[in-house]
Image (cartoon, rainbow, N blue to C red; front, side):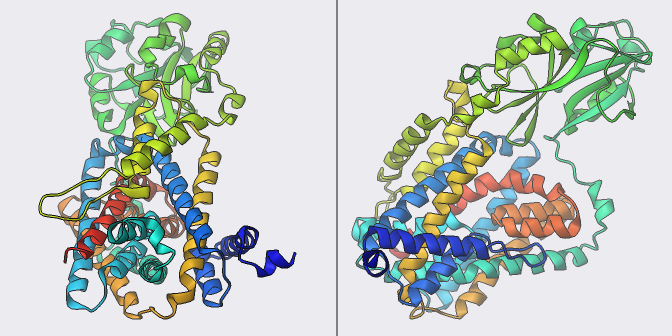
Amino acid sequence: MRDLFLSSGTGHSLMVLAFVIGLGLLLGKLKYKGISLGSIWILLTGLLCGALGIKADTLFLHFLKEFGLVIFVFAVGLQVGPGFFHSFKGNGLKLNLLSILLIFLSLGCTLVLYGISNEQLPALTGVMSGALTNTPGLGTAQQTYYDIAYGTFLAEVDKPAVSSSIAGAFAVAYPVGILSLVLLLLCLRRVFKTDLNAESDREDNGEMVREMTVQVENPAVFGKTLTEAIEKFNGHFVPSALTRDGQTLNPATNPVLQQGDRIILETQKKDKNMVRILFGQEVENRSGSTPVATGNLVNRNLTVTKPSMTGRKLSELDILGKYGVTVTLVNRSGIRLVAQPDLFLQMGDSLKVIGEEKAIAKVADLVGNSSEGLDKPNLIPVFIGIGLGLILGYLPIRFPGMSNVFRLGLAGGPLIIAILLGHFGPKRKITTYTTTSANRMLREVGLSLMLGTIGLSAGSIFTQGFHAIWILFAALIVLVPALVTALVARYACKMSFLQICGLLTGATTNAPVLEFVKENYGSDRATVSYATVYPFALFLQVMVAQILIILSFVL
């Protein structure tokens, strides 16, 4: 027991780290007006303990920090991978271009501050990462510096000054970044004279899927089968039901259209006008959902739980032809997708289907629809993916005119491989699915280990290198780029205020401010823009942090 409390061995180090993480998570539950620092309290608690002289084995902490960083970024990559490339389609391209503008303006502001101040660029990298709430950027900046300066990240153990400076600057800038963005959004609402009710009507993400009901009024489709009418349509929609005289017909029977028929379908918002032109005016679905006839025609949600379904196209399964069941919608990690024939399925997909009860039961057997199938973790792609990510991270990349070697590192390599696995894995029949709770557990454990070890390692020398000017710098790095981006989005791209809120919080990966927006403006609309830009913004911020560290050896 004496060794546990007084020694600096493994047991003692784990005990100290466990208390730091536990206390930090407890403090992270504190909120003010919906805003919380969350896991960053772990870093602050570690810094305090380190400053008070509470010690742990430095080599052991270094290992856990690297391990936590890899686990954290890989879990994040798997989470955002399925929607990463999808975010560049339609309206998402415009949003991501604006997020690139914000991030590179932040990079420019950081370089300007470096040029007019006496601050070291590594410390300013910590300020920028904190101001943009970019936690992976913190670990990436530290690792990149020591890899370039000493050829190994292990040099941090004997020469912790720069690492401590980066961590301290990050800890100071993080809350400043949150507060600055909140104040900016409050001011923008006044400047734009925002009426939230009116602006809600302007929010229109064309890639979002919506259910609509149209009444057949176009004489051009009278007497034609539903399939013949669909072939005339160049967009994407899937009919889920057709009602006639109070009865519901299964689209699988390919009914002949008559005047007054009501077709309930799933389509993308950008295609809704084409649907109206093809069939007729949109009408209200009085029941609020797809109506069900007196027979066995029902709606169900089925979950893909069989690994063999990963990478299979909907057209290959021919669910409509074999079972008379229509798949109208696919929900994947919160993203609603129209059930197009060329859509690849993957584990965890939720299929919205309509058909007879017995037929749907057969489709359920086909795709699995068993919770047990999702409970078993798929660890093979996780560990092989991490291994491939580390190999990619350590491949040397040389740029003309630069003597220093650039590497993607412990963060960049695993992050890229995880994104690629999450997106392309199902198409190559690689099952990468993990439940939301499992992914969150993996992500939070990695983040907690990283922040706790960084705090304990840097705390002892943090107070010696603290600079109050970091507070001003953090505010400038957030406010100037965010203001410019917001003005461009509003007046050049004609975006609504709520859409701009999502853009700014997503580009700065600022989840606490997103929660503030949702709680104070009573809308989840900003979440759509946030989710669209977050994956690429996170990836780009990690790369920018590395660029700044490389420039510190060149400038």
